[in-house]
Amino acid sequence: MSNWITSIEGTEAGHSAALGLALLAAFLHALFGAMQKGRYDPWIMRGAIDICYGALALPIALLLVPWPEPHLWPILGGAFVIHTAYKLLQAQAYSKGAYTVVYPVVRGTGPFFTVIGAWLIFSETFTFGQWGGIALLMAGIFGLTAYNLRHVTVARETLPAALGLAGIAGLFVALYTTYDAYGIRATANPFTFLAWFFVVDGIAMPVLAVLRYRNMTHKPALRPLMTKGFAGAILAFFSFGSIMLATRLDKVGEAAVLRETSTVFAALIGWLVLGEKVGPRRTALMALIAIGAVIVEFAG
Figure 1: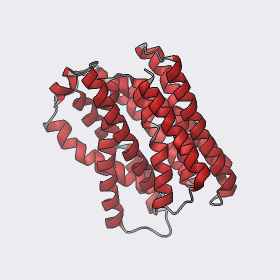
Figure 2 (figure 1 turned 90 degrees about the vertical axis):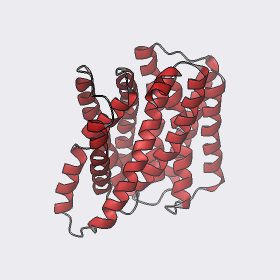
Figure 3 (figure 1 turned 30 degrees about the vertical axis):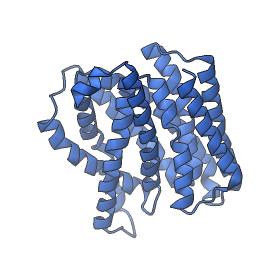
Figure 4 (figure 1 turned 120 degrees about the vertical axis):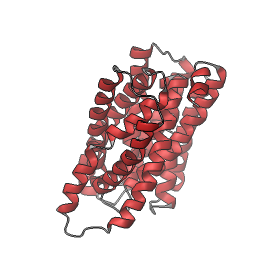
């Protein structure tokens, strides 16, 4: 499969594949975020997910993909630092705020800064129409956030802190998207980067989760926790893998913008699964996000 991926890089077929992969990543990432914000403490849930995907990725990394080139190891080390910082910020934000408020802020600050990073690092440019689409998408995301902030009643007293943490986490979204796009392009086989990324990225959060678990008064049962962690690991493989392959096949900025339609999926999941209200105004804002993403795709 790696030969097919490399053969369509920069082609029209690669562009179409990147579009599908970015939208798949958006849907799966929204599911992943909802899982982390569900019934379990977000720190414990993230630790369960990471230990599962690290364990699943290790035999793949050791046995099924080519060994990383020497220059790839420091790149993987940098990815470990960036992603760990992002996950710490995200877990703190989820601990303090409602999912449908926190998630749009985390994702909403990412597209603009990712596009800037793609311009600086990969010399990517956007048309005037695409910038208009980005503006619409971000207006919809932040409009959704403002609406949620005004009407949400869950954990209202900690919302300012949650929003601040979410905004910083959003900057790290842009940082890791651009950095990881550089990493997956720095190796001959994209699956080498993906497999070893999941190995090294699965180290930190399980340690923190174990420490937190030991200090909990009411400890959750481990079997259902790890079952859910395994499901989250599968989602992570396909979500992160999809967006990373999309950034290798086509423009990093376009893939990042399309992924942020995850905010639409997140609002629907918050309504259907977590019991959080949506309503006509939020539906209109979600439509604005979707329209912005469509404009970015077709105005290029």
